[in-house]
Length: 155
Image (tube, one colour):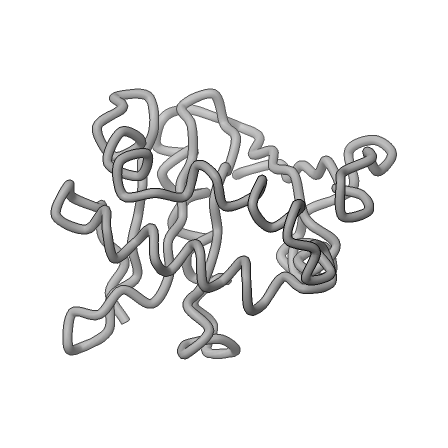
């Protein structure tokens, strides 16, 4: 698996990975509620992903397999916030999310950030704890339940 910067040509496939990951792997957060799912997916379009890729303050990374298929999508803002980390359902439980987080953390460290922050879903909370993140305040209400602000010191 190779993790590289996304290009505009990746936008449509990356958006599809985001949409499928949310719809199929995050049921504990959206409970198959059409209103919650519609809201969550609203900005996961090829156009929006292309705008994120073009944003100079954001890095969007894709994990690609040997055939070039996108297996995961991650993003981080220059401020130190990891904003995306999703894996295609066809590639789950293969270490892609862990590798993506490590790559995004390295990018942030290269920018001089000493701390990474993110907001975790209930689905991903245990994963981020296992990756060294700590809760950074109480859970916050979210339409599907709660989300968890988290942080990790980089070094």
